[in-house]
Length: 223
Ligand SMILES: Nc1ncnc2c1ncn2[C@@H]1O[C@H](COP(=O)(O)OP(=O)(O)OP(=O)(O)O)[C@@H](O)[C@H]1O
Ligand SMILES: [Mg+2]
Image 1 (spheres, rainbow, N blue to C red):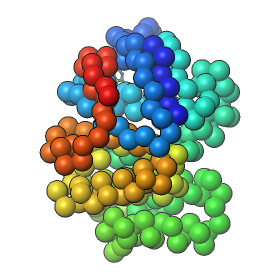
Image 2: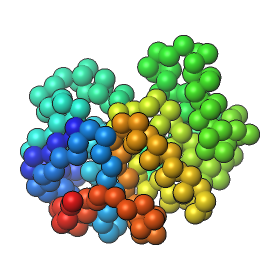
Image 3: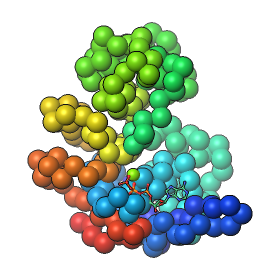
């Protein structure tokens, strides 16, 4: 369960707080839910996903994730909680010195999985996103869409409880985008809570689902 009560976020700018980029957000997403996250550029979609990934903490209000009150728990628990959340970053954030294989393996190795298991899961996942021939390529040797698929594989390989995807089809063609949606929907069917930020209206129309819509950092519509 994801619960926000009057959550606000300021980024720090210079010595003081910058403008409030998220304001008064109150909503609940039940365990196993699916939500599109919509709204114009600059509305705060990535900022909200950053909050839900615990990369930043609310500057006001209360956020609870997987039944943990994020403001009331320690750093160690936050780190553990974070491992249960998969994130596809809008700008991929692959580690440039690691191969596609090692980028995707990272969350499993951090979680201490045995290497044989890591090899099996990573190989399967990279084949699924049709990168089975690029296991040893580094990010600089991959196209934008290929890097995006590595980022997706890394986010889902650990079967997270919550999957956050920030414009995950931004560099993909329609066939690849549909394939990705199949993957996200299957994970959702198996119990992962999925939130997908996108500008891709056609994709949303092909896959109707509940949505959160942001404008100027506020929730303007949700069902
Ligand atoms: N690190 C930061 N420091 C200060 N302000 C920031 C930072 N990151 C984002 N912002 C500001 O927060 C607001 C929301 O940005 P955000 O990236 O969340 O929007 P978005 O909805 O994801 O947009 P897009 O659709 O273009 O990805 C913008 O006004 C942006 O300038
Ligand atoms: Mg964004």
